[in-house]
Image (cartoon, rainbow, N blue to C red; front, side):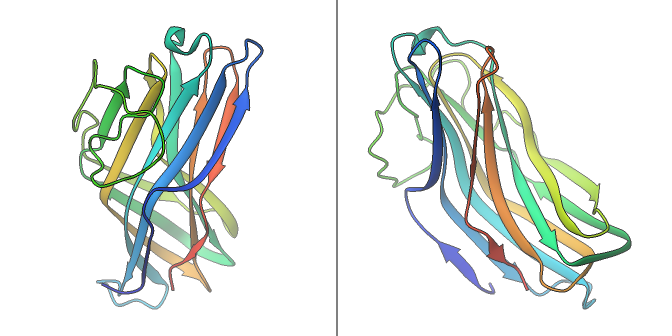
Length: 204
């Protein structure tokens, strides 16, 4: 299926230490994009599939006490020019969301990963609890459009992860090279914010 770039394990991460000495890390991994010929056959259309995961790992003296941390996962789409009415449509199956009970990300829904992180047991939420969805977002006239796939998913405790499998994207009305870059952001209840960005991938 077209040109794909795959990698196992952690692809990118970023972290911050809060005022109480806790380290909040956001990471992405196992990223794979597959660009395919658009079904509509229009030269200004781009179609792709995406697999991967994003997670939050909190370690430190108060890690287990964290409540209301919010995770956002999405894409930045870059292009030189967008025609009037240009859009991106994302179709995602149910997204698997896992909360870990120890100071490490539990990636039980993501097989065969060696992350060098502590493994936790699942509590509270597990499985495809985030329902399938279709998002239709207008593209800005030119430059970069930010497209959240999962927005402000709240969790308690030191760790959580979400797995994307078979997310389908269709971009129409973009002229020139189209580039995609995944991102993940965590915001704690105290307002500490961490964002990590993946490597850009050209789709056409």
